Length: 301
Length: 261
Image 1 (cartoon, rainbow over the protein chains, first blue to last red):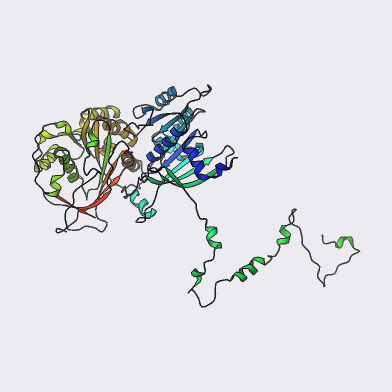
Image 2 (tube, chains in turn brown, yellow):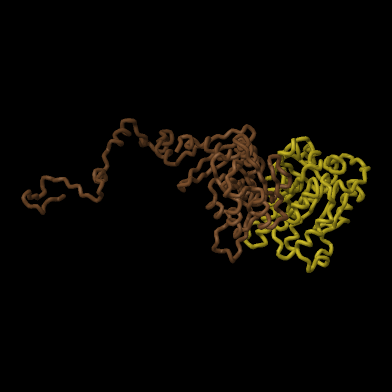
C-alpha cells in the first residue's frame, strides 16, 4: 500500500479524477446542497487525468451539460430500453479497450427499488464507471409487497465502492437543526446550494475495509480542505484549569508534579495481564502463610 | 410600515426579474413558487406576467404601467388548475394587460368529463399538446399537483417524467406554482407522492420563491414573507446568478408592496 493513499486530499483527487477503478460511485445529496457542483468537479478532475467519454442520463436535467459527450433523455424511455441504449454506447466488458467511460445518472431515485440492482449491474463494467446521484430527502413509498426488502439507499450503499455524501456548509446565522426544520416544511433557507460545500468521502477497498474522510470543497478555486474531526476522547484528556475555576473553594486542578505521580501509580493486577496464557494466579507469599516446601501439592503455581 | 421605503423586486444578478438569458431558445429552465392558502401566489404570478410583457414589475412600485403594444401571445402562456380565464383577465386588465397579449389555457374545467376512462399517459399527452412549442416563451403552470388526485394511480415520478419534463422542453422558462399546505410528514401514499412532487420540482429549479405566513401570526401591515433562494439545478449555462433575498410583503386591494426583511 502506498503511503500517498493515507493522505486524504490525494485520495480525494484520485477518486474525483477516476484514477482508481470504481464501478459504482454513489453521490448522496439533498436539496440543501445538490450534487450538480460535485459532478462538475468530477468532470474538471477527470478531463485533466485522461480521455473519458461521458454519458449523461437525464431524469431531471432539461439542459444538456456542456461536458456531456452523449446525452440521453430517460424520461420517455422504459427501464429496459434505457438499459439497452446505454449499453449500445459502452464497449463489451470482455473486449479490452483503452478508452474509459463515465455514466452519470442525475437521479437514480427514479429507478424502482426492485430493479435498481439489476440496472446497476447491467451498466457498471470493467471499462465504465457509474456515477449515480441519489437524493436522500426524496420520500419513497415502500410497497407492502416489498416490506421486508431493503430500501434503494441500503442497496446502493451496499453495492457502491465509493460514496460521496454532499452536505451544505452551515452558516453562522443558522444551525443545522433550523435548516432541517425549514427544509422539512419545504422552505429553503438562504445560503444553500453554494459553491463551497462539505463532502464526506467513503472508499471501500477490495479487502472490504473502508476509509472515511471529510472535506470542504470550493468549486470556484477547485481547492479541497480536509476536515480533521476532533474526537471526544481527546477533549477528556486535556484538563483545562480555567474550566475548574470558580466552581468551588477547593483546589480542583492538578499540578505537573501531581500529574506525574498519578501516571506512575501502578494499578493492581497489571502484572496478571502480562501473562500470555491468561487467567494465571499471581501469588505472593506473606509471613503468615503456611507453606510446606516438601509437599508437592502445596505448589501454588 | 407605510413610511418604510418600498423595494424593487430582483431575482437575478443582472438586476432583472426574468433574465433575458432565460428565454433565448438555448436553454430550458424551471422556477418553483411555493405558497399556502394564507399566502396565495396569485399576486406574484400576475407580477411575473407583467414583467414578461412590459419588462419590469411596475405595479409593485405603484408606478404607471406602460401600455403593451405588441400582440405576441406566445411570449407568455398561463395554465391553471384552480383559476379560470375570467379570474386572470380581471386581474391582468387592472394592470392594463389585455387578453390579446397572453395565452390562457384552462386545464380544469370539465377535466373529469373529458378524460374519464382514458389512460393516464394519453391524458398527460393531450394536456401537453395544448402548450405552444416555443423555446423562447414563458409558461406559468398553476398547481399541477392537482393531477395526482385527478388521475387514478398517477405517481409523482410519472407526472414529472410525462408532463413536467416534456413541458420544460417546450418552453424557455417554466414557472410552477405549487401549494405546500398539506401534511408533508404523513406516511400515506398520497402524502408521500405530494412531498415527492414538490421536492422533485426543487431539484429541477434554478430558483425557488417561497411565500409563507409570518411565524408570529397575523399582522395588519404584513401579509407574509417572500424568500428567493437557489434551487438544486445547475445554472452554469447562465452568466448571471440568482440573488438570494427575503422580503416582507403586503397585499392591498389594488397592489402589493415589498419591503426588505
